[in-house]
Length: 135
Image 1 (tube, rainbow, N blue to C red):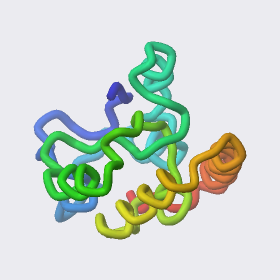
Image 2 (cartoon, rainbow, N blue to C red):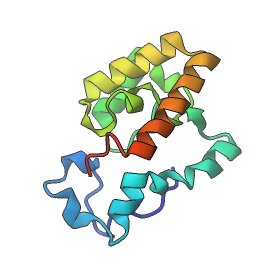
Image 3 (cartoon, helix red, strand yellow):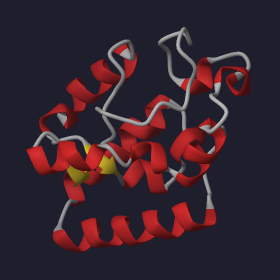
């Protein structure tokens, strides 16, 4: 999944919330890119290429084996990854993995055009208010 670089080269390849001091690993423009969610903008190419959707579970990092295993167990891995999702508007960075997976599973069961429109709207509101970004 392409993104604008917000973390310095050499940062450990783990989810940001697992870093001891995430702020120390940000590039000079990193905080702005993250707070504004502009670091996600290159993912529009993945959507146009058909590798991603606007709405769906966020792609897992290659080393998030616990997240990948839980999603596989719940059948969530069958969904196309999304730029935003039900878990993101219900907690984003603050949610522990089991809660994210539960919300992704709820999305799998309830998905519809109306729910996708609602998720996109709520995402826009959260991005404009800069809610849910912990680093």
